[in-house]
Image (cartoon, rainbow, N blue to C red; front, side, top):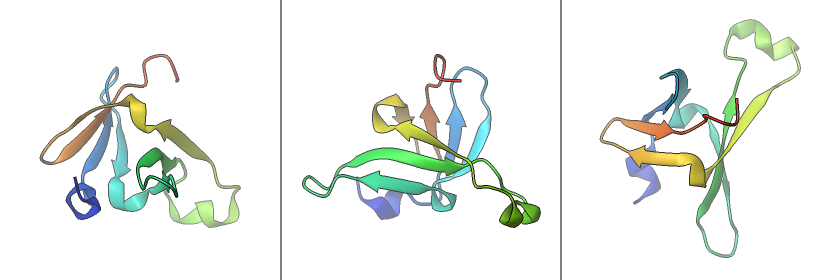
Length: 81
């Protein structure tokens, strides 16, 4: 799947159906040798005043992604959070 197909999809957690944001708002860690996505890095502070606060993020391994649908990505975080 191309990166352009993933861009803009909403990221949703599996156990509690919490919205984490959109793929365009997060970063990806990509392996230099294979070009595969290793993990998603999702920022936790999303408001304007977070500019002055220490940046916190949630790093989700690609193996935790259960399904990539037409408009969302479902991630299993049952034993991480």
